[in-house]
Image (tube, helix red, strand yellow):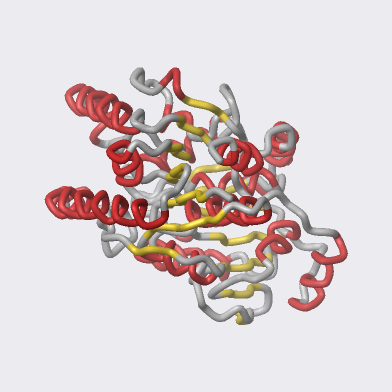
Length: 390
């Protein structure tokens, strides 16, 4: 029996949730799995029944309005390097203790550096090679040059991994295109393996049971408000979405998922046609019942919406280059509408929801891309690659 060491990024739940799915499959094949992470991800991993070694956090700073704070993130750079060094040391100690056959990192650099120093094979699951600057800064030629230089540097760092797996569709349908294309130092190493979001496995009977429990009116459209990401960015957007739901009350039904690990799994009824979960235990059923999904621009959440065949309204985190890039690609492919996060107001959210629900082309194009996703099973591909090292 071999051992796999899984190390997801600690902010939000997208990275952790897909590695937990990988772990579930590996454990069925008699592979011992050990985790390393921090923050909400570590709590989620423990909640799913896995032992998780915690390491010092390396994360961005967020503003009170829920946006990415450039000023405070730059101020945190000394702390990042300090914690990155501490992370590498922690990872080396953990790897010495567990003796893994292979390291699987999800968007974390320190496990790859530790694996390189210890001569252990490593794989990285990555949908963001470079850091995109905000649209305002990218207007300047010097900023674009800086962005490219940093991208090539980061590309060379990610290249310490033996394999770089991109959990996305091959070009030209790559959702994370703006975040991974154009970096020469990794271009030849990228392997497109398909989405790693959970595949839909909900029957109509299961969905109908949830609809009846909540008292859905199936003749009216339903919007799933699925806001993921750092806690500091979730709640400001939830408050705006709640106002938008009030404006559309009587026309559109809403289900809100706060995505709080260990939060209440019981829905709270809001008004006549909205329900609020701190933690939604019937997420897949709600995806199935929905006509559109309101979300940020996280890659995992977008992958899920596409696999369920649901058009989206995206409101990326302000100044968050990766989410902005994903959201722009979604709009380019006609899979949804993007609301720019700069000073976003509930009325803009309402207009975008009405746009997506009122134009059938969004649904048609989403269903076309959904058919492509069914030919590539990202989780199965990751599991096969990890097992090849046992």
